[in-house]
Image (tube, rainbow, N blue to C red; front, side, top):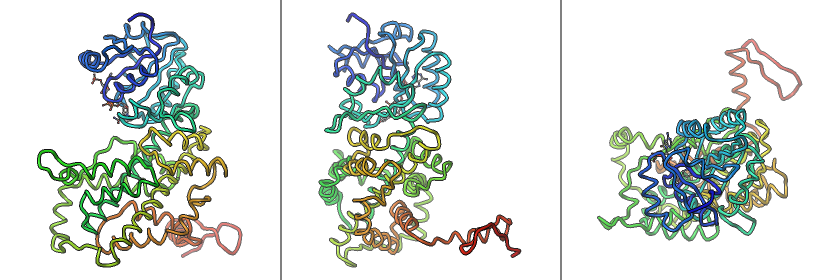
Amino acid sequence: MGGKSDIGLIGLAVMGQNLALNIESAGYQVAVYNRTPAITEEFMKERGVNRRLKPAYNLEEFVKVLELPRKIILMVKAGPPVDQVIEGLLPFLEEGDIIIDGGNSFYRDTERRARELKEKGIRFLGTGISGGEYGALYGPSIMPGGDESAYREVEEIFSKIAAQTPDGPCVSYLGGGPAGHYVKMVHNGIEYGVMELIAETYDLMRKGLGLSPAEMGEIFRKWNKEQQSYLLEITGEIMDREDPETGKPLIDLISDHASQKGTGKWTVQEALDLGVPVPTITAAVNARYLSAYKEMREEFYHLFKAAEGKKFLAGIDGERDLLKALEEGLFLATVIAYGEGMDLLQRASREYGYNLPLAEVARIWQDGCIIRSNLLKQIQRIYREKGETASIILSGEFSKEFAGRIGSLRWLVGLAAEAGIPLPAFSAALAYFDSLVAGELPANLIQAQRDYFGAHTYQRKDKEGTFHTEW
Ligand code: NBP
């Protein structure tokens, strides 16, 4: 195959392979490289036949076949591998070349890399890519940030390979420095929250109502007609899947120990640093940690719970009512998870000067990514109509939903508490809502305690000034 390649991609694991094929399908010639050459050979043999892909087996050769300015996408494991690949590339690059880190890098690393590369005349784009392997192949949501002139050089390619919606391709320049990876981090934080809420819904349906996976699959599918949420959609499919070996529902055979790669934890750490409450997302991260306490949970189960036997809730208030409450409660708690994430983006945008276009963020999450859902259309509308400092929960359509349905969320959290079924994310979402709408919180007592033991002073309701009491 002759001619130079339009773009190069390094890292041929699942995401990189699919992204390379997506770019090639959009009409570009793509040079590909992977640290382990056997993977490149296998990729070319199995998926690269008759495609405009140019394999390279060392970085010098890879860089040489690229059109100027060189555009190189890294799809390698986040962390030190990204620095190692950049180190390896630098001797062969020229001023103005562009490196795009498409992995889930921590935004502080992206900030540092952008700074270091700028000093060397290399343009850097920290770019979040969501949608898993399917999205990478057929159209992801792309969240680029960093050098704007570099973005303009790859805008056409990104716009062609991104998921397409009536509102445009799911890609938009999000701001300087690490803005793209920051947005991707918060996207993943919201993803943690919504996944946990759906998992808790499933738990309440199986333990509280004794429903089978197939029955739950039907329910998730029905709910999803309105919501069009990718995570609800795949949950419905998961419920239907049989294990080919045993014929049992596969979900019943999967161990209840959740893993994580860190983006949810980073979201929570960042929220704590900026003083933005994200309790639903935090509960979701904690729930994954608790799931890892498998041995301890089993021991405690035998000590405290096994004797209770199975107690279904169906007889209490009627299965249909509980299902309705679950649908409504899941909807509200999901809005809260998105709201927490959007609040964090708002604050970070101000604090770090990213100037994030929040309506655009909601638009490019509408398709291609894991948290895509009809909710994002409403969120986008809120930001376009009310400005980007608007609160999701308190605005227009959502505030009416909260006013009308909060009783459902309250009821099911209470019911689950009585039945001993843990709903950490639902409970956190409800407490968050109740705190937001509480005219009075007990923080007056906190202030008094602080003043008591540390003379930290307090303000009074009835007069201006700062006060201290000799308690
Ligand atoms: P992985 O995150 O599993 O990374 C594997 C790739 O990194 C392989 O190509 C591997 O090369 C390469 N690599 C490693 Br590990 N260390 C390297 C080093 N020191 N130098 C050069 N290459 C090195 O792959 P992935 O799941 O395809 O994800 C790629 C990126 O996209 C990650 O940042 C991930 O977090 C992000 N992401 C993944 C998903 C998803 O659904 N999987 C979704 C969204 C974003 P080798 O073959 O030689 O070992």
